[in-house]
Image (cartoon, rainbow, N blue to C red; front, side, top):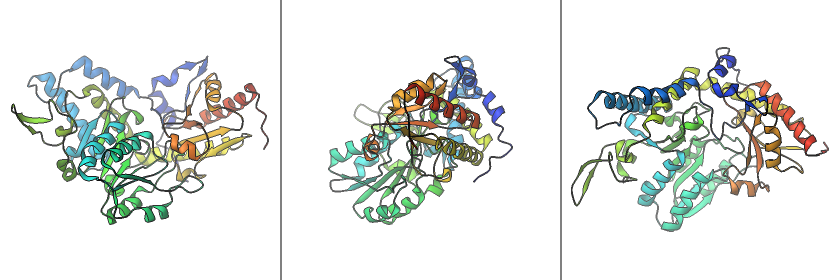
Length: 418
């Protein structure tokens, strides 16, 4: 097991998150829903406020001081993200509203250009609806076919099925690097090699992985990477698309309007250079700037340290929760093979009832299908309860979850047999 380094001072980290001082139902908040959205450190909150208080202005076209300051701050975040994911050039970083929009951008531009009738798109059963529905829409429009790789009994990707299903018909492989339901860490680099051997491109949904793992695009070997800043300490409303410049330059614009053009006539337009070709209109300036503070925070912690902490917490949580009678835990058994996500059910209990009861103990977990309805059907459940961990969670909070679940069993009148 990776050891959580001494420099990763959880008590100091927790002091940076003002919301963790909040009480729910008279109890200290235990926030275990970071896979849905993370909490924000004070530095991110301050960066957001400072923009509006000190240099609020539109960017790129202004020559006055406020506009120049805002432009420099905004474009500086692009460079921070470039370094964070090891991208070769900052112009390859495209800002979107979220990871969902980034995937839709690829489907609507590169996808319509390159995927034709009879072509195949390979996905996995682990995919969030955001990495499924856009490809369903594209396939229906152009006459392509969606093919699904298989999972093992414990929720891992079956690489043999990828070897069998990725063929000359495959034009795109799109898959998550980390499941938001099972926590499964997918060997996307190995799959990317299989895809490229058949002439296909590879899209990685990094919404769950980029906030929690060291991620470098060269090591992934992918052609597209998408993620959302709100899951990694940043504000909502900021997503990122990365792709090599040569691919982005070959793609048509996603939207038309201001800032994505360099010149316009009555009958035609000349599109702007990368990255602005894909960023029409006034962007989410404030939240992009605040996202830079989130990148700074994670970079200072070190993503290896973030991962080590989560392995430690997840391993502890798996051991504790397995002692609860009647529990079913989904996904890989080892904390080394999964992210900080644990989905579970109790025999005879509805997850929504469970989520409401543990909230009375101040514990925030997620319940439902987690935007993965096909996977839920494969698991023969309507939904699950889900606890997800991040840099600010402690073993004491895992103990609080355990006690809250014990209490929920009693309140709901559940008697389980081992």
